[in-house]
Image (cartoon, rainbow, N blue to C red; front, side):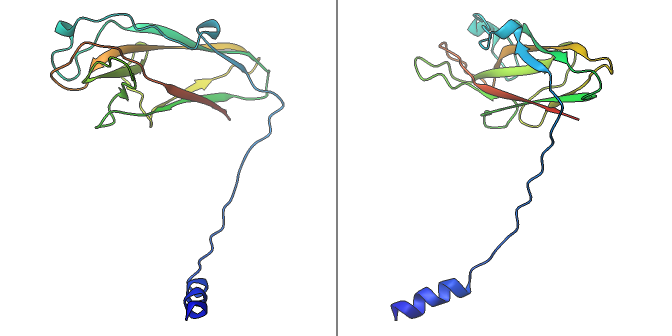
Length: 165
């Protein structure tokens, strides 16, 4: 009977095809954040400033710089952010494990715009044909993800990726 059961599982097997695509470039740009610093300090914000969902602390500007982009090799770059989000995917989640503030997350926007970056936002950057350097400024700030914010630490980890066309 065991052989019959094993045989029936094999009869139900299914196969799928995976396709992998990639691209080889002559060279890519060198990417740095704030001159190589990968920690962005958002400072301290008073609870009184974070009363309602969406209330924010002071913005902190940081720069992602693409430098030494080779002439003619790539014409466009795309920067995408990903990370763990809060319950409604509007903000990046507070991942602090010690004395964590509650109902607080991190809001990320391209500087000078209302575009909010969570896991589906990205920035397209045109790279000059002659190559060189291109910079994009972003702002990050603490944000109330609900009411009843409590004091404590806030930490969020984001991954950014750069792809080229």
